[in-house]
Picture (cartoon, each protein chain N blue to C red):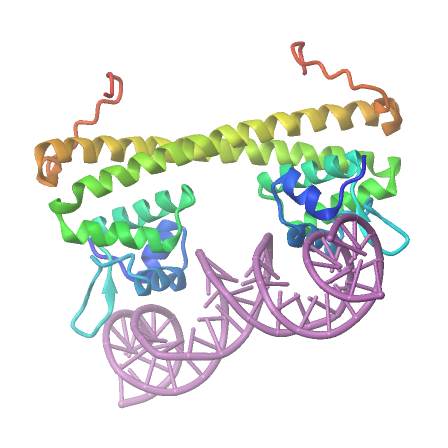
Length: 139
Length: 139
DNA sequence: TATTGACTTAGAGCTAACTCTAAGGTTTAT
DNA sequence: ATAAACCTTAGAGTTAGCTCTAAGTCAATA
């Protein structure tokens, strides 16, 4: 099953422009062409794009994703590097989640702050030390 | 307790350049100056910078943070807008956490993939359908 | 008082990741 | 066979968020 670049773009929620950009940056070394030079995408290529999206979602820059793709092309001699890279991504994502949860705590406090201020009609009710219900029901 | 811009930068883990940039963009309408035009930062200003960092951590662009700061200056008439904004931030952060958790699942799969490939010395062991221990002990 | 170091501004420069344009080649549908 | 709708490339343009520079002012120390 072979797809054109725009069919692939649609399926992967990208644009054809973006896929060509990824290709130009060396992120798609596996994508093949017809005799006349037109790219076609196999299931394996879609899987490659999924990996790119996954690594991007971890905050990895394009250049480092290229390094990974180069390792993939190089073969079994780079298994250790690739393993180490994914372990690093794991801890990176875990700390991003932790940070977002701390951010969420602050945001929840602000939700409470503005909810109560709104009910009171003024922010002034928070002029003294705030009584934020840490352990109570927040509803 | 009044701090200079570089003391503030150090304390907040920012640069003086960045703080001036935020000020130029209208994110610090509360920061006052000496007669000769030099900024000084109070505890309240540090709190403001904390809010900016928090909103940035939710992925909010500078321009929208400015909108929020404008509302703060405007006073109690904008309490509803500010409340709604924080509710939106809350759902935004919650979905970012969910997405990161899905990303983490894929990364964990890849860690397993490369760990087992590394142990086998080759990626070929994954040529057939993968037997990823979904419900078993992973390490 | 003079020098050093921190402050000010306007504005230029940088980087990442697209995003788009122009000019041309290929494929498909009538 | 010819028009429409794709595909290709090189390279220019865009955006956000800094980051830095230059030229000058202000404050603290020897």
